[in-house]
Structures are given as structure tokens and as C-alpha cells.
Image (tube, rainbow, N blue to C red; front, side, top):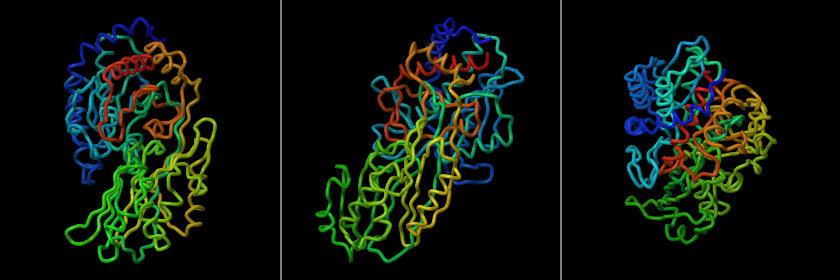
Amino acid sequence: MMHDLTQLKDQVRAKIEAYWPLFIRDLADVVAINSERGETEPGYPFGKEPARALAAFLARAAEEGFETDNVDNYAGTVSYGDGAEAVGVMAHLDIVPAGKGWASDPFTLVERGGRLYGRGVSDDKGPAVGALYGLKIIRDLGLPLTKKIQLIVGTNEEQGSKCMEYFVQHRPVPSMGFTPDAGYPLIFAEKGNLWTELSFPVADSPIRSFYGGEAFNAVPAEAVVVLDGKRVDAAALAASIDPEDSRGYETDVRVEDDGNVRLCVKGLAAHGSVPEIGVNAVVSAAMILTRFFGDEADGLLKFVAAEIGRDTRGEKLGLAVSDADSGSLSLNLGKIRYDGEERTLCIDIRYPVTLTLEGMIDAYTAMAKRYNLEFKVISSSSPHYVPKDSVVVSRLMSAYRTATGDLEAEPYAIGGGTYAKKFGGNFVAFGPEFPNQEPSNIHNFDENVVIENFKKHLLISTMAIIALAS
């Protein structure tokens, strides 16, 4: 039988306040580790820094007396209780690159204006440390539980979640659970995901290199193009730029010491699941160069400027599709690699839950054939759907409503993919973002959390663990 969450709310909240200084200390320690993916080495599947973050996290949990397990530096577990059945809380310690534009060091936890700043404070180091303190609070309260609790932390969520693919092959999977890596009140459906590298033939061009973007799942905030100074006049290029092509964001044209011309275009970063709220600098640069070169612009430039452009639903490419549960397909051009040997676009597509992965690949293949292009699939996942009347959704929604008093908000679907997909039909995404709150700049500079909102998240997630483990 589930515990009376209303009676527990004040006790949990008091514990959160008591442990807050320790929480800040531990969060600062993991934020300090630049755990973006590195080079694969023996024993380090995603590089040394994600493994270092995992080791530090598990060491802290072991200091608290919890049972820990490092799963070959792919993932790790922190366990409490001894029930035959387990509930899981899945979080990740890897991050996307910090990028530029921060007001303070992204790897130093800073409190400013009622917020905590640092790469990973929201996505997803803050929720990971928060879940550890949730286990500590539950242990303090001495509540009788019928299920074991496992906090499962991974190190490759931002680059395809290979960590959890490995975990489910090498360890038992809990019977139900949630990942605090999305939004409230609850995510009952996640779109399918398709990452591809779309290749264009190499041909003669005044462009020596064109680079922009750092990850499939982020809107590029900067693009840099180097052009042959013997074939391109810098003044003419600068004069040709229409501010509308960059949506008013900064552009800069200059002659380098070697005589080549450098074009730098700024944009607005955003998560790859919501490309419509960003301004893609790669697209902006392609528009500027297509305008400048006119009919002599190469096929890749024309494709990016005209066929992708500002269309984030894939309509011009014939990929647009939508459904009632999860909305429209989204398309993000996350990276470009363009030099003398390679011309590749890295595309991130999120497709509706009623479309199968096979159907999405078929549609993409047909698109590529129409443009005489080749592509390879880098990562893919099928859609994820959990009925709203399931036990896991019902109990988590009860915890959310009890903790917040919000009786109106309803579960919804997202374009982002979370660990829930890797664990199956009894797992959902749940928190930490609240409806209608100011952006926390996930995958952007100055990532942050509002302190009072995050304390509320800690209350909800701790009560949610109790609700599932009762």
C-alpha cells in the first residue's frame, strides 16, 4: 500500500533544507568535472572524464553507506533496500560541450540572483545528485518499503545513451521507474529519434572549410567559414549580407593573415528537440553565402539554405508528419563538416510516436534519393509510449499533485529522448523543469536552475520514489 504522501511532505521538505549545504557541496564537485564525451580508450568507453565523474559520484554514495556498482564505466548504480522487485531512478552525468558566452566559468557552481549556474546543473547532474539525497532522506525517515530502490547513473545520454544499452544487457532491469531529465508534470510519450550523416560530393569551391555545431542534438550558435582570398573579395562579401539572413545576429567578415577570408556567423543555441526556438548559425551562413555566390553556389549551400532553411518540420524535404499525441516531426541541422575531403551534414530528427522507425528511415531514404545524396544512420530509437492510466503514471502524478497542489497540469509528449526509452514500457520522464517557468538554458550558455524550483523538484522526486517503492 502506498504511503500517505500528504503526511510525509513536511518531513521531506525539512530534510531537504537541512541537507541543502551538503547538496551544494556535492553538486559543485560533479559540476567541476568536464564530463563531455572524450576519446574511447580501453576501459573508458566514452573517455576518461565521464568515467571520472561516475567514479566521483559512486564514491560519494559509498561514503554515505549505500551499496554501489560501477558497470564497466558505462553506468553505475546506488542501491537502497532489499526487496525482490526494484524501482529505478535514471540520471546522467555526461554533458554537452559548454560552448561560449558564459558569464562565469561553466565548471564552477555559482549562485547568482536566486539561481545556480554551471554546466549540468539542470541537465542532468543536479537531478542525479538530488536523487542521491532523495535516497538519503528516505533512509533517514525509516519508511517500510516493498521494493528495492536503484539510482542508475549513466555517462553517454547526450551522445545516444549507449551507456544504458550496455546496462540493460549486463544488469537486471528494475520493474518501473523514472528519469528526472525532462519536465513536469510527466512525459508519457517520447518521439522517435533518427541521427544521420548526409553526405554531398566534393567539388571545386572557393570555400576552404565550413564548420559549425558541436552536437547532433543542439542548434549551432556559431558557424565559421574560411574562403579562398584569391577568389572571394571580403568587402564584397560583407556588403552582400542581408541582416535577415542571420535573423539579426552578429556576422563578421575579415581577412586572415594568410590572405584568406573568414566569415563568422552567430546564432541562438537551443536543444535539438526544439530547433524552432533557436537560430541556426549554419543555416544563416549558408543563406549568406548562397546570396553572395548566386547560381555559382554549390549544392550543399543551396540545400541548406533552401531545402532546410528555417523549416524545422522537414516540410520542404517531404518529411513532415504529425499526430495528436506527440505533434509534429522536428528536424535540426546540428553540425556541418565541410573541407577539401568531406562535406557532411549531421541531422537530428524527432518523429511522432505513431510512426515506426522503419517508416521514418524509409521516408528519409526516399528523400536522399530525390537529391542524389548518400547518408548513414549514426543513432536511432523507436518512439516510447506509456498509457496515462498505468500504475507508474498514476503514482507519479499523485506525488506531483500532492507536492505542488497543481491539479490541472496533465502528462504530455516531448521530442527529446530520455533514458525511459532504453528501459521499456513502465518508465517515464518526470521533472525537473516546471511548466511555464523561465528557460534554464539547457544545452546553452549560462545553464541554470532556480533554487526554489529545484528544492520543489527534490521534494517531488523524493515523494515519487516513495510512491513507487511502497
